[in-house]
Length: 159
Image (tube, rainbow, N blue to C red):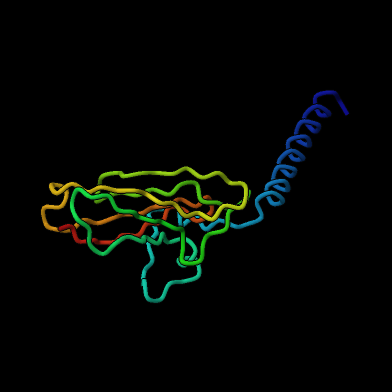
């Protein structure tokens, strides 16, 4: 065997070994399979009365008063799922955000460690001019590293 053939065979063997090791490590550290279709847009519960198990753990749940008085503070609680989403090194919620209509109201970044239960509280004040029709829509969103972005909304009356 000449030197050139030997070097080519060695380089190809090294590359093949490296790719195989990388794939094996990925399977070991990230064992959960990802559904690529969940990353194509914003996910929402298709039928709130009959949620799938995935929707029950990923669609944000908004807790707020049914009606509020303009200019006065109130509390909005956003949790990820009816049964709270687990947090771990391979499956976690990256952030939870709240918007009032199209206006951002707050965003909390979360870390993929510890034993967190993804639930946050926002203190909100809605001015009278923000609700000319007498109502506003609260929009909560969250992003899961394995299941994409999820969104829920809640209409509240403003007096």
